[in-house]
Length: 116
Length: 114
Image 1: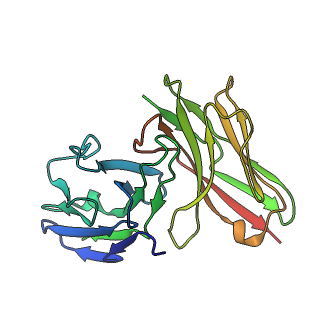
Image 2 (image 1 turned 90 degrees about the horizontal axis):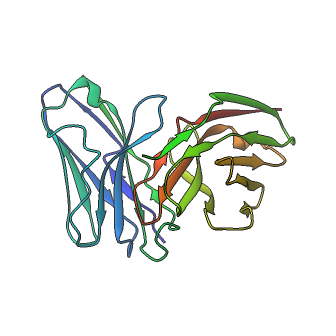
């Protein structure tokens, strides 16, 4: 079946503009995660959606970052008034809620964001 | 708070040899999961192997095995019979008991030499 998809694959924007990144999880996966990966670094957690529960926003670095998810479908990550330090690859992952703590997270190909 | 430490920024291995990538972790949770992911230059994150904290046997998946030493809080990845296509970044990660976000290490860049 189809994996996690993300769009756009690349986004170049000017400092101060808003951007929207999209993630389509694997069908039937209840949990959805957003991570950020700066150049040469590991992944940093941003936000986590689990079913209809309130999202875990504890990883969002500032109030310029927000995300939405409708039910168990698409999620959008919005960055307002982008700054150069927002330049990174933004990765989305999804997992089923079948075996809590054991479910593998499956990642999309990422969106490479460059803020000029 | 959970923490993953990967002390080897880069490793080299000869083709067909085995290699061990180190990972130590810190957590106060009794129930947790340990994961290894491969990230080739294309950027995708590929799941390799999983070990649960209560699993008695070390996990194996084809050429990948996980050397889990709970008392030492280590979860090293062993790749047997290295192939040129194994050249990539390798990340160790952990989750706590529920479906929580993964905490990642900084990664190890593996280069396989012909």
